[in-house]
Image 1: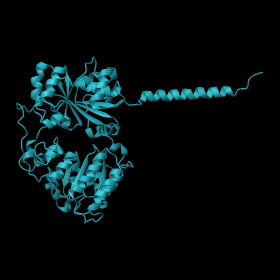
Image 2: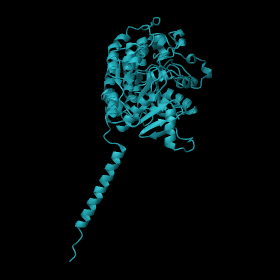
Image 3: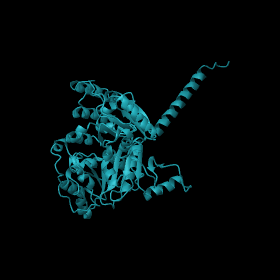
Image 4: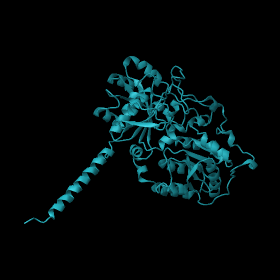
Length: 481
C-alpha cells in the first residue's frame, strides 16, 4: 500500500487527505510549511519511502521566488535522495527555464504548474510519473542531464540543437537515451498533462484555489533560515559522497548492461553482487526473465513445487528477484537492501520503464564490453553513440580484455572510466582478488560486524561470563575438613 506525505497549507491538507484516503492511500505525515518539513528530518518524522506531495511555496511569503524554492529543494534532496517529490508551483514559473533545469538536475521531475486542481488531477499526478524526457522540449535535447553547470547556462528555449553527429545511426543498438517524438512537438508551456487545465468548480471533489497572500517571512530572512535548517540535518548526510551512500538507509542502485548485447552481463552482475556479500553488505539482483536466475531457483528450492508466495530467494549471501516476477523501483528503494543491481537488456523491450531508461537513471550505470582487440572497432562504434559527458558518467568493464586494449581505449576515450574484469572460475564464489576489485570499483569497505561475526561474539561473551560465574562460585565453597 502506497503512503503519501503532505506538505501544504492546513486547508489544502484537509482536502487532499480525504481524496487520497478515499483512493486507498495512507497519509504517513503532514507538515504545513517547508521549514517544519525539513526540521522533521532529524526527528525521523519523514518516511523516505513515502511519496511527498508539496506546495512549492508552503510557509513562504508572496510572491514566492524561484531561488527560495530551489534552496529548500536542495536541502530536501540532501536527506531524501531518492524519494519521489511532487511539487505544485505557480504557473508563472512555467517559463523559468533555469528554475526547471535546476529542479530536473535534482531529480525532481513531477512539477505541476497550477494553483487550481481536483482530486482526479492529484491521482493523475501520482500515477503518471514524469522523467527527464518530459522536459526535452523545454531544456533542449539531453541538456542538463550530464552537462556541467557552466555549460547548462548556454542552453535556451530555442529549437532543439543536435549533439555531435552520432556514429552510424542504429536506433536499436545505440546507447543514447531515447527521445520521444511527441515531446518535441509539444508547446513549451505544456507540462505534459492536459488534464491539469482549469475545470468547472461544480464538478470538483477536492478543488483548491489560490490561497490568500502570506506574510510569514520576508525574502531576506529565507537565507538565514536555510542555513539554520541545513545545520539541523542529520550528520550522516554531511559526510563524503561515497560514505553518504553507504551510511544511508537508501540502497545504491547499480545498472549493468551489455554494450553490444552479446556480452556475459550476468557474470558481471553476479561477481559484483557476490563481492558485496563477501564484504558484508546485502545486495539484491533484479533481472527480467533470466534463465540463469531460474537455474539458481531450482538449486535453492531443490525441485520442490512452485512457490506461489516468495518473490525473492537468497543464495550465498546474495538475494535474487525470482525469474518472471515483476519488480517496482519505488518498493525496492524502500527495502532493507544496501545495493540494488539491475541486470538489464537495453536492446530489448520490457514491461513498464524501458531497460535503457532504467540503466540511465541508475546511480552507477555500468557497461560490459568485449575487451578482445579484434572486437575493438565494434566497441568503439558503440561508444561513439554517447557524448563525452555521458561517457564520463558510465563505467566500462571489459571482459576477456588485456592492458593493450585498455591503453588504446584510454587514448581514444580519455573521459571514460574503464577497467578489466578479473579472471574468475565462478562469479558467485569470488576470490580475494575479485573481492578487492569490487571494493575498488564501488569504493566500498568491508563491514566491520557481520551477522555471523556478531553471533560468535555474543556466544563467546555468554560463555565467558558463564565460566567466570562458575569460577566465582567455586571460590566461595568451604573446604572440607
